[in-house]
Image 1: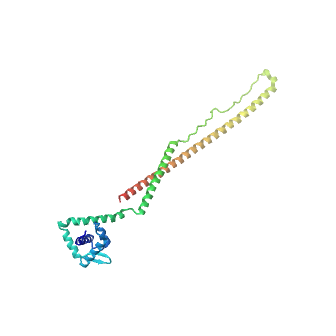
Image 2: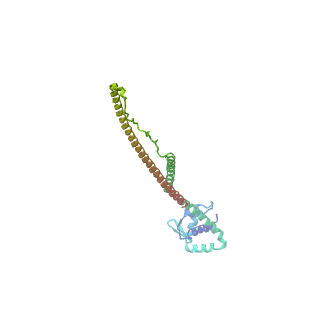
Image 3: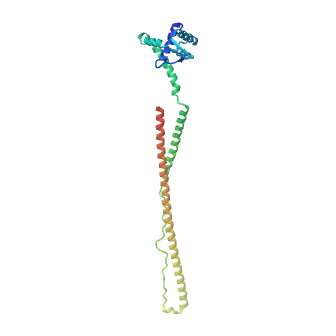
Length: 257
């Protein structure tokens, strides 16, 4: 872009494009980077701006430039005509490229957002691991949880009893009085032993009944404890499922944003 007038027109169009929405002060460097021609140097832009300021077509303030209102209206009228439509579109594309390049850093997630997403992902992974562990534990307890059953301890119904027996001797053997007394004494002792055995059998039977009652009570307590554990595991699993659903929804909403 060796033509000086052409460079000045391009600078004016850039200033015009920057001030379309509202009057804007821009620097010399911004104008230089808005020109796609590699042959134009920053010195050429500075000299063109100085000439435009001298011609009162551009205002300068603290190292920044703004197009004059009269020049702005003249360029607007000229650009609205079909002849200069292609030139204005070229400048507009350059400005769009600048806007896109300026918006990209803003669209990048900040470090804080990355930390939040990483924390949420970590919570999701931990929740999945805990939920899987509890689910496996619940299934194992369900398979292994059989009611405690103990073999019934049965005692023979017939009691150990020895009936009292009487000994009758014929009159022909009255001479055996001594032997009779001895036999009666032995039977008396045997009856005492039989009564003692009956008492011991009753005591054993009562002990068995108490043991059976204790076993039944222990069985009921154990089953109740297992049921409480299953209920607790199920409750924690449901809470984890709810937490996972909430975290997944939060991640989806964050991604959409």
